[in-house]
Amino acid sequence: MSVRNSARRLTAFVTAAGLTLALLMPAGPAFADAGFRQWVAGFRATAVSGGVSGAVYDRAMRGIEPDPVVLEKARTQPEFTAPAWDYFDNRVHDQSVTNGQAMARKWKPWLDRIEARFGVDRHILLAIWSMESNYGEILKRDDIMRNVIRSLATLAYGDPKRSKYARTQLIAALKILQTGDIDESHLMGSWAGAMGQTQFIPTSYQHYAVDMDGNGRRDIWNSIPDALATAANLLRKNGWQAGKTWGYEVTLPPGKLPAGSKTLAQWQALGVARANGKPFRNLSDKATLKVPDGRGGPAFLMIRNFSVIKAYNNADKYALAVGLLADEIAGGTGLVQDWQRPFTKLSFEQRQELQKRLSEHGYYDGKFDGKIGEGSKAAIMAYQAKVGLSQDGYPSLEVLKWLRKQ
Image 1 (cartoon, rainbow, N blue to C red):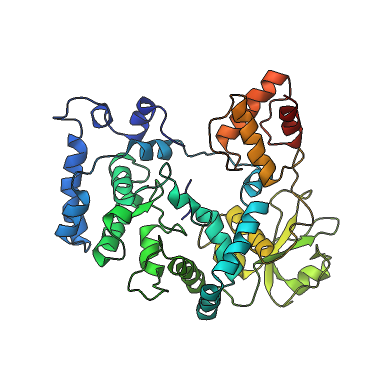
Image 2 (cartoon, rainbow, N blue to C red):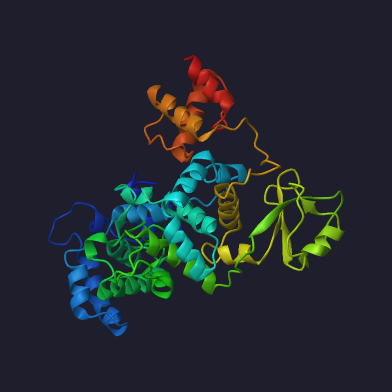
């Protein structure tokens, strides 16, 4: 469900995406998008056979053109694995916790009802909302949000790797229009078609969407109750165990530990203990040991609900970030053993200050959002090169102090 660089070099991605130059370059209007228009006309029968009315299809596809930004994003998705600290610092931080606690207060009556109906911890839902759309702030970004029908049609036609996925999702998105839950102008999502406050792809929306506020529409774009209830419904239907946590930070005894799933009682007998010194709950629960940053970083015992979160996004880091953020929104104090970070960590406000100062020095032209992505890292490295520091791109207190002296 979750998906996250703007178009830079059209000619570079045309070959990779499999489109002809005539499709995207401003050749003559008589033949510029002929291939795409032919595909749209041909896909109509597939959509109709899949349950989409011809009228809905014709209205949604009228005047549609391929979106070059979508293909650029598909081509430039990073394949590297970020260090643990890099992933978590951008998602679990003081601002995401503060905002989550404010949302918990604001939406308490609805969270009470959602929790009672689905049995899913409200703090998990708030953490997912933060991870997926920054509590809805992403939906206000015209540089990120795109027309879902156009995005999926572009991928279905022009991206061989994602064409099967995109065709399935396109039919599902057209069916969403057909139900009247949302109109064409508001059917917006990520470049890959993830939609709404909690970023559901169209087929998942079909399976799990809930009209929690009772207005007759399942509106995960504009209704916070609908969006959070839809996330809760997904977790419940995938086996969420009410009243239980996702896992525990733990300390490990010296020596090698066995692999596989064991009860918390068995792990405890092997010398594994909660990092905060508190006892485990439900010693009969089975758990799996994970050390995402190696033995020198924090260690965790993951129980069933951790795997359920992965039904939302099948990545250990994602599920762990949701769990850690949820715990802090609920009032927890964070990790006992921090990540193995090779620099002094900045607060969220300091990361924004870092971006602002880099911008003032002409190295950075992005948003001051506190998230250290490729643009911020490149700016840091350029500044480090200028002042003779090691060019590691780390958002460190050391770099910020240098900037403050300039």
